Image (cartoon, rainbow, N blue to C red):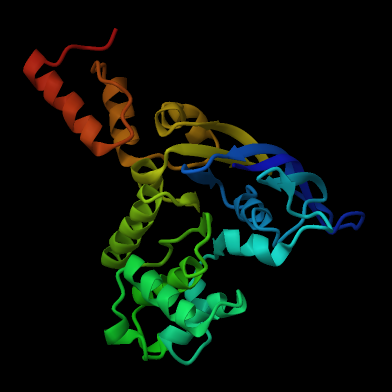
Length: 287
């Protein structure tokens, strides 16, 4: 069943001179099996919203429901909940703390009360899921690894708890191109294998490549939701919010502005197909 936000509002320091509304009356359903991208300008409320999804933060008003159960009810087992909704913070490598990679990944499963054998199986499976070799780095200090490897160790630590929903806050921030490519492939594979993913990202090209649906935040409010095609077709509205758009959207928008009859494209493969049609058809102009 889905994860649902009902009229969620969050106010920082309510009643004080520093009161700030971070989220205002958010209604959003995250369906099983989708990859939802949360986008928005810095300060739009994306990270605050993400931290409501597993009860790390509680709404000032409204409710967050998992399988129809209010996750912030006093009767809810929050510990059990956090094993179902795994949250990976921005720069998660800063949260690594154990002396070996194995111990760091095992921390969550141990807290679940699993046997030593079950913990070991989960560590091995999680490392395999993110393309890390237990034989090569399992007994190394995580602080000896590259930035990309540390990011994947942190992700493996969450995956070892086998969450139904994975929430990622800027997962590729600060990574070099090679590490970024590997991590995006990991995320895409996890989603393909059935994990529900919520991903915050400033990279519209990543969003265009991965997302099945997009939610756009603006000044603490949910401005719009839709498929990547529906959202990225609203070029003027997005840029008016100060948001980037995929490079294919930029190029197709400019070409249409020159009078070329091509569809709005948000992926380079689409743009290449449109240009090939133009070349074969003698480059007709837009009406």
